[in-house]
Structure formats: C-alpha cells, structure tokens
Image (cartoon, rainbow, N blue to C red; front, side):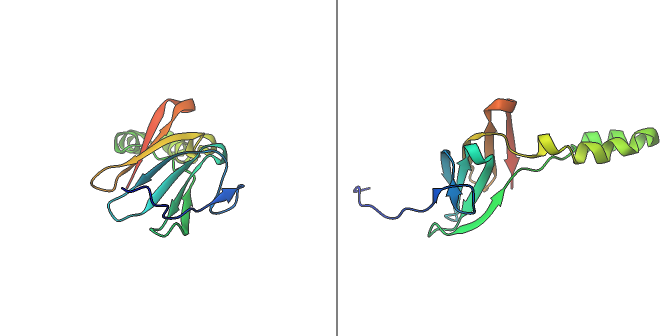
Length: 120
C-alpha cells in the first residue's frame, strides 16, 4: 500500500448507503464490502465499487435441535411460530464488529445482546 486515495462512499443518514456511526468494515474474497452501521442497527452491503447492494437487519431462527423439539410436541407447535418471529430478537441491535472468513461466512458482533450472529 502506498497511501494513494482510492474511493469513498456513503453519507450521514438512515437511507440506503447512508450511515449513522459505522463501526466496522469487512471485505470478503470476492470484494463484497460489509459495513456494521451501529446506530441504524443494520449491516449494509456494497459491491467492489462502493455501490449499495442491500442491507441486512438480522434474522431470527430456531436451531435444528429447537425445531425438532418443538415439532415433536404438538402442544408447542405455536411456540415455533412465535420463536421464529420475535421482532426484537431478529433485528440487529448496535452491530459493533464484523468479519468475513475464507468461506465467505459473515460474523457480526452485537455487544448489547452479548452474541455473535453468523451468516452465509
């Protein structure tokens, strides 16, 4: 690296491609850029040129073990739907760190919830 300026992208705000306290950036092996947008409670995704692609607000799911347990107990069938749709838990809350491994798995740190979410 020779310190030559390459590009900038984003601005202040809450729209697509806008940030409110971005806290971390990760780039996968294909050059896709992931930004932890802390105060907007989301992850934004950009292409190699810094153009907005999509945003992620989080997904809540029940683990395979949990699905099997809920499916095996007919009196709990409604619990699975509630667990899959817990609005508060499925949204990111102040994502503060992000990294991408060699298999393009995206790891997102949420300090307020003391958890790491992993996406492919």
